[in-house]
Length: 135
Image (cartoon, rainbow, N blue to C red):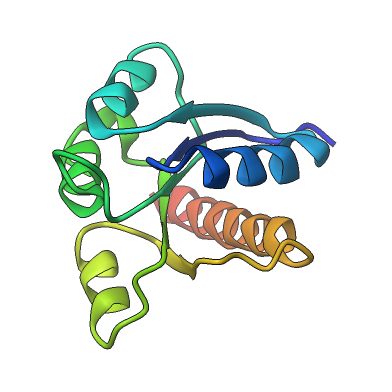
């Protein structure tokens, strides 16, 4: 199965390494960025199907970066999933309001992580198919 391209944005090298290992072991094409500036630079040359976005980044935070990405028509079909240690009441709602499609808390469950990502992609593909049929 041809897996989708993924951009992982996280300022923790350890988190990047774990997520990349899990995704690459399932055949995903993975690019990484450790802050908003680097993520925007990667997006100039790489169009992911999904972005895993840490909310707490140095400089521009992940929610602001998500809003910026989603305001560009080039990325209208790119799904952004908040991947964060934030698990306080209201955090998921703020992530969704910023343009995130979903919310995964850290530490991630390494046994279920790729299954969760795949389910987000399947839901997204199903929704896009329905939208395209109605246009």
